[in-house]
Length: 605
Image (tube, rainbow, N blue to C red; front, top):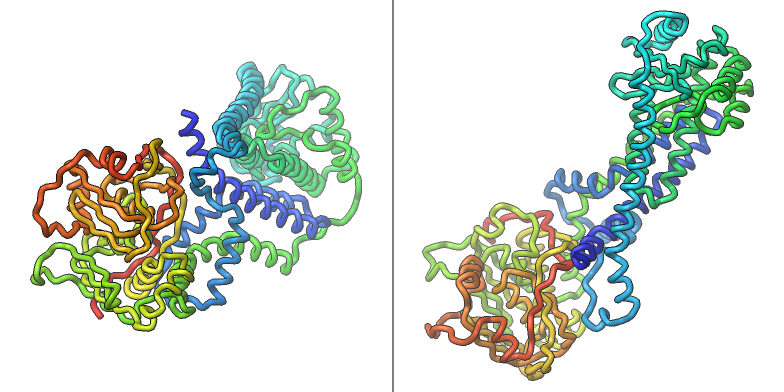
């Protein structure tokens, strides 16, 4: 259970941190705009704060995903454009996704403590969420009890005044009127069918002018749909209860909401002194509403409201320039992430293409053609002749080529076209002679992954492939050294590996290539936790089970199979431990996957 919670935390923590960062930036931008509009009507500032609140419910990643869905084929961008896209991504998402830690890091005290804290953080969040919801439910029950005991009123002094103000305020559908024996302040209850809950004990203390001022305030709450927007922010507070900014934002929303209604009531013709007195009388004889989604008349800071009501200062209306500024800000808040999503697929493709121009290893010439079933055999073949510098593949799919280039397997590929693992291709590529002469220098510069860099460049050029990495929780295996020690022999010879059914033989390959081959056979990602950094020679033989044979037939990694011998030996996991001194531990953990954004099927060249 704890391990599942830890894996869940590792998957959501980076995205949550990026979302909070982006939402905070939006709140700061809204704050700057409200300062710019401090001498204008409160309703403009209220809409800005409301937009900042709703941003917490709409992650930028959703808008970016919409942009990716709307992406189209386009030329690869320049280096300047790639730098711009990378800068935008770095600013918008400064918190990187969690990556798997090396085996030796898990033993450090800090990592060990953090591992135990992660499940606790999710439990704490859940407890806080439940506590906030229960608190609001208890307050809701209090209001609901007052509603049940209230009597509907269809005529009288209060109802007549309400109907007159409704007509003045442009309310077409009459607001229900309930007379309550409780002491709660007058308030609007409900969203779709708002009802005014009116305490009967307050009417004798209000003159006609006071009564109409209070009712006008409530009518404007209905017209502005304040209950709906308050309920949406309550959802934000419940989900992000741990983030103090959302509570501060809620206080700003209530303050600007009440101030906006005050301004509307005064503009409707109410006397400032009478309106202020009516609010104070309600405060004297009634209790405030326990929920912000039940709009009353006494919310926010009363002292500041009284000063604002009594100050006869001129409020500026939004001119064309300011309306244009706010419209542009709203448009950019949506258009920027969508546009980024549209263009996001290109940098991955362009970086691969530009890599070959900047000196990274690549094929000097390459040809990709649809596979013809009449050629020799329909069986897949892959060969890389390092002496001649040629790469040949027959009857291979794009999925196989991606697995070869990115050292992954099918479980790590997400998305892509329908023909990803069905359309077959023949590939012929040639390495430049100067590259062969300087092989060791290129290996050093490319961190040892020369083949991967060349294949990535080929896929970008021939298939217009664009993809990006993500971290997701997947069933996997950890490849670790057995308690008795490794039996691998380090080798400095030619780095080759022979792949066969039930057999892997190497003259010197890195462990990550062994992990890749094990992944293909087991159908799960295999994460190297051995800590072995060299190149090793080994001879591994086992008896494949039916599921392994089925996976190998479905893939293009068929092996040579020329000997025709029947594999013999123990099952793969036992053979690995007995013959190589390694073992596989089943886990569920964050694993890097590759999300395919774009690919085109070459017609032949």
